[in-house]
Image (cartoon, rainbow, N blue to C red):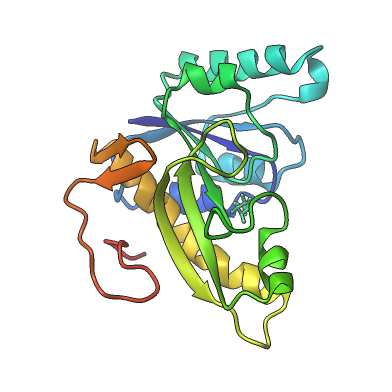
Length: 216
Ligand code: GRF
């Protein structure tokens, strides 16, 4: 399966995907990375690994519709079948989502539906939650919502700061995002309403992440 990855910044989740493809853990390829930020470090990662990329700037288009249409055009041109939002800081419209029905996924640094939106790690700390984590989910029109594919939980300790917690969560983001892409690429993911079923997934007993099948 060809995937497209949309990014706006650092691109560490993109890197986790690049590493998984390079290691042969996922079949197919990253056919295109699109950045809406010309200074995104993610672009350096593409250059370093020879991954095709395009910078598409919102300000170059008169409307959000035209901006999104250009992204859809580029993704279709590369025959992308799955769009992965990996730190992409924009909300996509119904029109974009309709171009890839149930084939747009996002990684979010909380256990949704808790702590949606920006600064999810800080929200969890400020709330006094004792456990948080990260989620890969299909993208629906609601922000940081949509059927959950996989989650990993991370305990919050009294010593945690926003930075330390973000770092702990990020380590699991880098495991569950490639895992979700692998499952989808293998055609094992079925959606029944809000519920996602992964065919043949092994449910273990680990408290942190019972669904993770392979490690990095
Ligand atoms: C991650 O925390 C992701 O969950 C959120 O944005 C951040 C992107 O980080 N959506 P990176 O660019 O992948 O390093």
